[in-house]
Length: 283
Image (cartoon, rainbow, N blue to C red; front, side, top):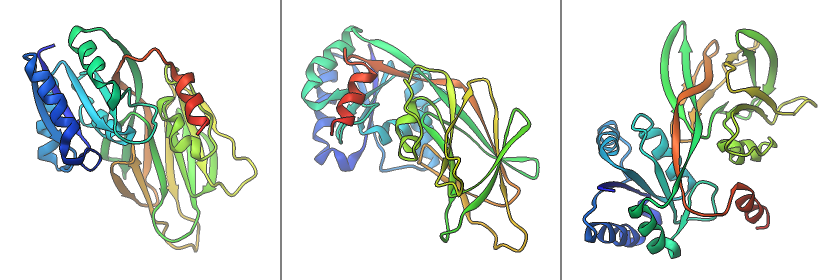
């Protein structure tokens, strides 16, 4: 271990005390540590972060699950493993609590940990045959209304074949990792994060058929925004892991499939997913 990048959710780390502690701990052992705070989200910041991550042996993410999701998207090309340090409430991705930092850092330095690979989604927004947006997500891609309280018409196709039309607030396509996020809140199933599949879950559909659809990791989902004759133009947006929203128009298509990229998560705890799930469900 020679170089570490640290990404801090500044509002959750008062006066950056935990950040400073980790940086000093690592530097005393001769390990370089470059610090980024997520107060900046501009393109220049993302380029600098990506370059730093490519040269690092690990990326430490201080905050909660949301901070780690943003980091996963920002450094998706680097293949550098992520270690989440929890500064918020109990999450599913942050591996280390503040009280366990000294032991965790010693294990990180000595290489005493395992790496768990999580599948990601590759999403494209297509308008009139042109790709407007091309992004990768660890948790989910959500298409939902952004304006007045009106339901939107979505046409769903899988592998180029029509599946179903939904009249709903939105649609969620999630990974197993993302099954415990918005998908769970919308009534979708909880899936062990090591699984390889896609989850398609409607948000408040105007139908009695509200079940999620579980698809193969090899399937490609296309969600097209439709407008009913005589109805007002729907206000819709797509978001990638909740970090950025892109306005959509009728006729736009969101194409989603498994990404060729993965997110590598550093695991130190003996507790598995079911242990975390048990604690979460007991709150």
